[in-house]
Length: 391
Image (tube, rainbow, N blue to C red; front, side):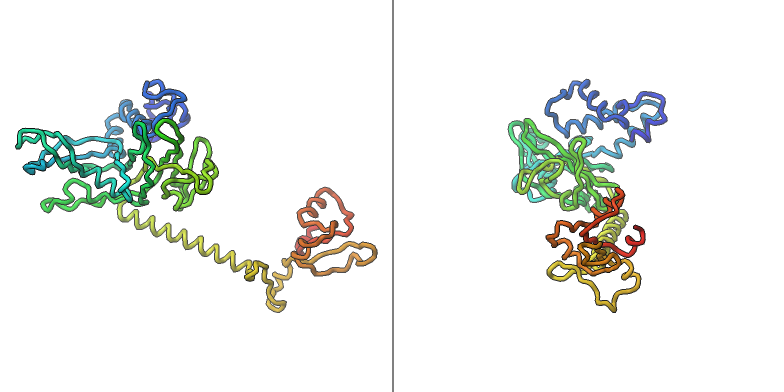
């Protein structure tokens, strides 16, 4: 965003050096008075503050175009309708413009769709009904009037004095088509599909007073995911990316069966059906390619049930394989037992299992050769024909 709208603009950027120094963003947050240095702060509040700064501080001549683009990227418009439980009189409420979608969480929720349903349709008390002319209990149904390109979903897990640790499942692809305004009406055209793909996860460990955040993001490469904790990173699998809680072992030693990071925020990017099909095909091709590489590696190194390498019969070995085959051992004269020109075939298992103190491995021989040591006695060395010629 900064590169597109401010790199060539001579006026002040909305957040100074945001694309060069992330630390400057934090200091400007402290100067705003909303955040305190070295204090435990809320990631959701910080995220919304950053988006507000980008929107409010855009400078001319690009302010108008930028703010329109900003809304299309991040703003979700929610339309709520209150229906009286006594007389069924509907009342449309003003559209709410939000940068995030807040979802409540209950232990009864099995997945994110349960949380969406309970958030978008709920009972509210003491709301004035114009037809009854008094406060009544209402059914508040909320729909999506306008959807953003980037959908930020946050769970209400951090409440004063408590933290909800319910491990709610969430999908890689989120379909909110059914919650669009007019989706259930027979008088309007069917809305376009409203589908999103997950790009990042924000997770929290600790309680409502103190803790730590990590972010797990989808990488630029297909099927790559990276968990980030401050300046440290750890590669995640897709299953780990979609897990709740998230359990990093390297950047944060959660340990086997230890406490993980509770999923707090989800960042989704809108996709159309064609993009989704292409992404699915690319993922399938990647998986198939990895499977072929695995099979190819297994074919190159056949193993018996006991785990020992299987060597083909003599008449099955080609001339090229003979030249590169290991297991030829040269022995220097020791007590007149073998001349320098004699050779014997010794398996690698025999070499590695030998108790002879004079037996060394190929790495040690190469080191000795590089250091100019030419006189070796009683040494059994596994070499190939190419290595002999090189020496």
